[in-house]
Image 1 (cartoon, rainbow, N blue to C red):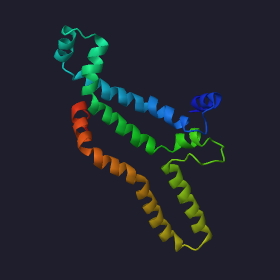
Image 2: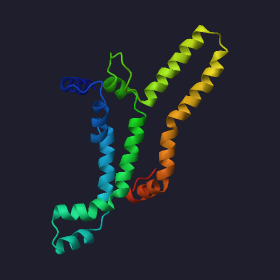
Image 3: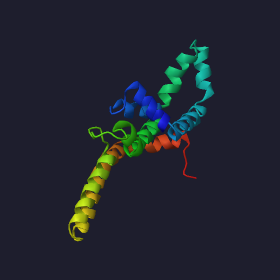
Length: 176
């Protein structure tokens, strides 16, 4: 984490949205390995006869990839896209370190997870100052805020559910 923090500091993208967008696009860490596995499994299942037929018709490697393999890879791209969105939506540590900065006083780029934690901390401090009856109200407010923070992900999943299930089937990801 620290080398990446120093790199982002040196190139001047700390406390900006670029510090959050660049790792999401490039898929850093364990996430990138899973993305590669999903793509590998999918492209391994593309029939070689389609690629060979394209080459017989005069298409080169790049044209066969862009005209045949890539359009059929939409399910794998959807799976990787959804995984990436969910992982970066729930990211709190890197957001606090890179986007807000370790010692920054601004919180204009907080994600919902970081804002939810700040919200929870403000109510916990108010509950410790007030009597213990506020804790019950505090829990219900925290649960409502948590529901609001995951609502966009739920709506996105409901819209893309059929495509996502088909994508999981085609890429060969199993729960076993």
